[in-house]
Amino acid sequence: MIDFLGSFSWTELFKATTVLFAVIDIIGSVPIIIKIKENTGELHPVRASFVSFGIMIGFLILGESILNLFGVTIEAFAVAGAFILFAMALEMILGVRLFRDEVTGKTASVVPLAFPIIAGAGTMTTLVSLKAEFQEINIILAIIINIVIVYAVLRLTKKIENLLGQGGIAILKKVFGIILLAIAIKLFSTNLKALL
Image (cartoon, rainbow, N blue to C red):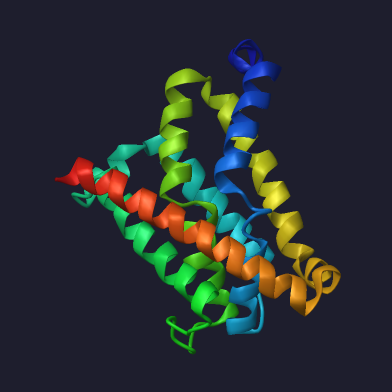
């Protein structure tokens, strides 16, 4: 308890929360979330939030050891995540279906929603960077705050969808599809250089 009080910092908590919020970008992911919901017919906010939380906490505590256990580097992990993001971007921009129809709300809440959209390679790399700079308790609290925000957005997806309307959603899908495509290409090219 004394260690907890000594390690806690409002400044570190604020910075870590802000950085994670920017990397997770759950608000910017709303069009993708709506797309997943269209494909599967349902979403499971609690499942997606818990899985994302588990992935982030697990990666924070064990770090690269998790990937090393399977002989996978962070760079290879990021490249794999880039392929999934690339495929989703193509779906959004071109209006094509690349993911199989048998994907249900339960499985989609884990892949691709929890990973790589919420707790993707970028988030995990960020957690490793934050751990080198901030106290672990502040990062854990920052993760919890961001997961609460993620859950709220997932719960309000229907209301956001109704607010935007079909036209607004269509426009956002194209715009964020291009942004997502750019992120996927950047993630791929940056980490491919490290792999080679």
